Each structure stands twice: as C-alpha cells, then as structure tokens.
Image 1 (spheres, rainbow, N blue to C red):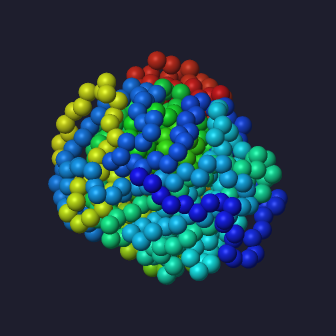
Image 2: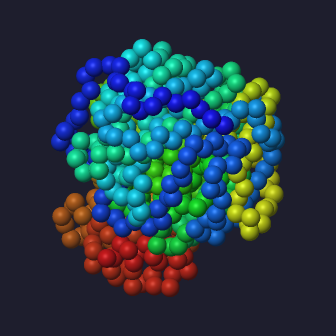
Image 3: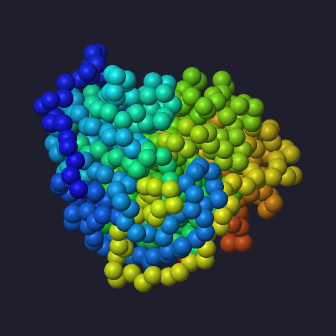
Length: 597
C-alpha cells in the first residue's frame, strides 16, 4: 500500500510563534517523565525501514521470538458488552483497508515542520520521534509542536497547556491527536498536520531524529470496535499466570467497546521484581521481540521503589507505544494486589494513560486534562467530594465505578494499541503470528462485565482512620502522580494518616483489603521513624518483624511490613533479611534482602 506524502522540504510552519524552550527543557525532563538517565541499556528495539502497514498486513521484517519464555492464550469470546459503540466483533479476516497505517519519514531535522496529510476516515494519529541507537540512548527527544488544519495548535513547547505531561522522553517521544476535546480534535478533522521535533531544549540530542506517524482509520471515520492483543510479562514470581490472565480479561473485555484477542505470557527473571523510576525504562526494553503489532505490553512486578514507591501502576508517557516493542515507552508496568476490583482499576487507568488520557485533575492545583466533557476538582485532597471522583482517570482511580466520558472514550478509540475493525459488522484484522514454537491453549470465554465493581467496603478497619486516609490506602496510586512530585506518604500525612497506632492496627487486620494493609504497614514504619523516641520505634519494629516473618500473612502485607521496617530501622531490616533467608516465599526473601542494603 502506498501513501502520497508531502516532502519535508515543502513543509513551512503555517503558524507563527515557534520557539525553543531553551534551558527549561532539562527541568521539564526531570518533572514530566518517569525515566531517569544513566541506567545501562539492554535489549534495544530494532528499527525497521520503509513504509509499513500492520494490523492484518505483515510488516517488513516481522517475526522473531520474544526474549523470554512464553505461552499463548486466545479466546473467541462473546459480543462486547462494554461502553462505546461498535457492535459485534468478527473473527478475523483482512479488512478492506488497513486499520493502522504507518508513515515513516526517516531522519528529520529538529525545528523543521514535517507535513503529513490525514485523509477522511482518520480517527486519530500518534507521532513517534526516536533516536535510533543501539544500545538505547537516554538523550531527550520528543514532539515539540503539532499544528493542524487552519493553524490550530494541538501541542506547543512539548505539551498541552494545563496538563503536567510533556511529549518527550529518553530516546523516544510521542504525542497524539486527539488528546484534547476542542472542536478541532473531537471528532478528528482531516487535512494537513505539521509536526516539529526537538530535544526538549536540552541541546544534547544530535539535531535530527526519525519520525513515524501511525494513523488509525476506518471506512467511514467512525469507531467499529476491535481486539486487544496482550503480551503479559511476569517478573519472577510477582503473580501467577492464572490470576494475571483473569485480571486482564476482567479489565479489558468491553473496555470502550473493545474485546480481548490473544494473551501471550512471558517470564522475566527475579531481578525485575523490584523496580524504581530508573529501572522502568530498562525493564520496558525487555519487551523487545514480543509478538504482534499492535499489542499491549503489561509487565507485572512485585514492588515499586524510589520516587515511585507504593505506586500500583506506571506508564512512562502519555501516550506510550503499542506498535513497537523494546523501547523505553513500550507498555505499562503494574504491581497488582490480587484483589480483582482494585486491579481492574489499576489496569484500566494505566491503559488510559498509554492511549493518551491525562488525569482529570492533578494533585497540583490548576492542572488536569484538556477535555471539554470531564469535570475538574478545585482541591484533590477532598477526594470523594470532587466532582470527577467517579472517573477512572481521577488520580487515585476514583470510586472504582470506572466512569469515562465520551471524549475520553474517543481518545482511547483513536489510539494504536488494538487491532481495529473498519466497518460495521466487519472482522478485526488478523493478528501477526506469535512465536511459532509456542503451543496455543484455549482459555475460557472472557467475562462480559464492564464496570470494575464497587470500591472495597469500608469495614471496621476504617473506623479508626480519618475518611480520606482510608480512601488513600484503598485506592490506586499512579506513577504519573509520583513522576510529577506527589509523594504518597505526604498525601497520607496531610490527610491525617501519620499516627502510628491506627496504622499498625489496620496493617494487622486480616479483614482489611490487602493493599490497605500493605500501605498501612509501610506508612507505620515512617510514622515510627518520625516519632524520635526509642519505645515507639522498638514496638513498631517488633510488630512489623512479626508480620513480615509470618508465612500465613498475604504476601503484599508482608512486603508492606518489610518496607516499614526499612524506614524505621536499617539495623532491624538487616536482621529481618537474615531471618527470612530461605523463606518459602522467594519474593518475600528477595525483597527483604533488598530492603537491608
């Protein structure tokens, strides 16, 4: 398939006022992204030349086995029952046009607008700027500016005003249209778009980068459904295949009118069970060689640390990348609780970020998403009193009802992570083949429920806590919030959750949800350390050690106790690590050893 492209040399910027942000870029790189420079590169993604059409049409150079052992699950399922439109989803067969089209512009110079014609039928597009080096680079690259038909600005100075995310990252940067709710973006307006690349004002990158634009289209420009193929990576013993598969099917079947396609499992070593903000990009490099494009890469780890400690999900950029594996943006990373309702919220919230959705409201005042039909809260610390608290993209996951607005659904449906259907009643494009050496197994039909279910009940465990402390302990803590400077323990303290005894009481309560217990025990260690008195510290450490060493306790509660001990007393953490040598739960043993370092 061929496309008629405007040469870059014929692409003057149609709107004035272009500038570079100068030294501000370096500060924004620290503030706006999760990735940290200085980590060693591992498996870099190979660049593929030429114009490629996927989603049912084999790309040049496709194939190759994943970097880890894998097994595949596929399910025909039933008709979608979730939000969005699209009717029934067919069972394969190449559609009359490609649902996704890639236009590769090759190397383009920074500051020079590149024109791309988006025809009628387009739902949206994602622009990807990449520095094609091996090993992967941590130099900053991104989308500085996008100008649409009529001179409408869709991005300027690597951002959308009022959001806290920036369209650059380390080695690869992305931006998408639509990500706003203006009448020039939802519904999508076809025509000429001008895209300008840059290095975030750092002055480090070489002055040019590779630009690729992925366009999603249907015959009539309306969404008709599709299938989500998933590469599920499990770090060590972070979670079982059976539970992760169930969680993925529950979260994504029916999500904005989509259905599950193939789920392929991969296993990573135990060295990836714990990741901090510096390790996330290297972890995502491990997705290199995963089968299928487009496909959602979901990496399950046991624990987040560093600046993203106590996060339950991390997405490295808004949007991230589902059409290229092995980059610093190739998927989402989650630390699931084993509690289906909470885990559904985590998975949907992080997929929202990958598709291009921002938080409806940020913890920092006056920031939120740029959509017209979402509500915004004047003070997020009000939590349940916020008008957007029911929305899945509220920064804590909200009330777990999973509400999305029409414009939010439109942004997700225009993104690149699924195999699309181009006409009403048509079939989803055939997936690219998985590793031919992988045996297939037939899974049970996916559940049809769309709503995540009610939030965990407020039982006796919450009676001694201020209401907002209970909400924070039970909810989602998003890595995007952590990346912009929000500290979970500071939030908890500001809500009245810095008292040692109530936290310990909740942490030991077997009736409390497991994520509540884990976070309460981690916070109890902080509270003990802040007490500056020997007796409270000794008492807290003894109780935390007993819980951490008890194999009858849930793993996540034990891990929370280990985090608490590390905060309260490094010496006690070392003693605990020695005590837990050869613990029956290898994850607990390894996390205790790490906490003792």
